[in-house]
Amino acid sequence: MNLSNPIAKGNTAEIYLYDDKVVKLFKEYLSDTKAINEAKKQKYAFSCGLPVPNVFEVKKVQDRQAIIMEYVKGESVGNLLLNNLNEAEYYIGLCVNEQKKIHAIRVNTDEMESMRERLERQIKSVHNLDEKQKGNILKKLDSIKFEPRLCHGDFHPYNLILSNDNVKIIDWVDASLGDIRADVFRTYLLYAQASVELAEMYLHIYCRNTDLSRNEMLLLLLQLGFLRKYLRKMKCI
Image (cartoon, rainbow, N blue to C red; front, side, top):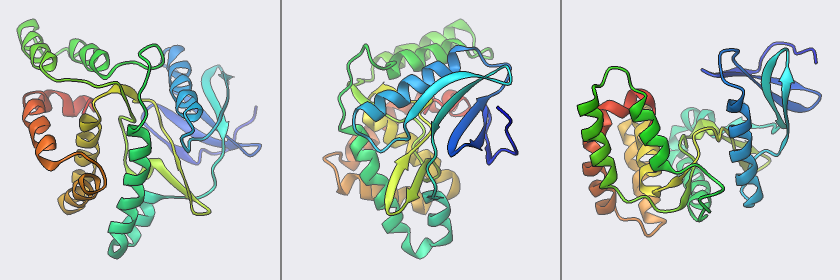
């Protein structure tokens, strides 16, 4: 497989277009399970009827692990949002509608890694925390209830592609089974990196269109506040 120049680059992989398919080519240093685990999560989301690019296969390309998947031609909602800020409410509403579809899915524990397990593993892997600090954080983690709902883990407008008035959700590497409030909080933080105003608009629209109240979100913010300074750098929340 001869690949030309990548159409996108990320921290862990490069994206190529080949034979009307997308090739997500992972960096050499990553374990062989990286592509398999991400593909499994994306396949599960697809099987739930979510608007997700179909995964065709996982294979070695140029001696690197790769996911071969459906190519979705379109524009990221992130670009559309930033180029049309006067229509921000429309585009954020579009995103919220897709996130609601994800959060409506109750997941069998055998089908997806739990959010608690994911956070616990990441906390234990932090080298600049001693065992006492890790223990305190894990105790705080134990006080948070995690429901068996599907969470994307990295849900932001640049992970949504608008194609012929249809939206496709990409990048399922951080997906887990857990508390949707934590997923909303993570999205809020991602919006806030660009604009607190957009972050507040997102939270308002999400709460308006679901049975989640702002008070519930504030409660979770208090619960996660102790964790936040340790976890933000690790992209855990």
